[in-house]
Image (cartoon, rainbow, N blue to C red; front, side, top):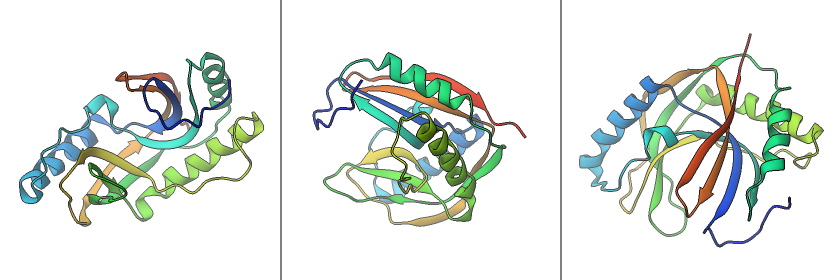
Length: 189
């Protein structure tokens, strides 16, 4: 199935690999967001806990349900070999780009090296499967917790961290509110 280049988000199927924070990290992210809400006049709803994630590798965007693509991505994911690691995000703030609402995110410095390494590992298996171009896109690992019209400046925080011991494949249908985990793979080591 070919990826769509349309900018119309209604009914768009998006497939990507991601990390999901632990329950403790979700609670801590929510507490930090709650603390920032009053100080920076943030009013938007937080991302629901079950949808919090750190995006890794994009598989594609499609007009129709991409069943065969999901199956191929799942087969490729089974060949990923990586060890568990700790992800630590020590900054929080609004990323202004375009019109509001803007994403309020956590991102990090050295604490996200493991995220980048896993991204590269997944990229290599997707290249071998013929699913992505050889050239690896650069990523800035981050966790979006809300999108708001108000902004918060970059703020250093006690690291929001968790042990990453698995990665997931997400299938999201924009415009319909559908979001599901299509597969999970453990990191062993």
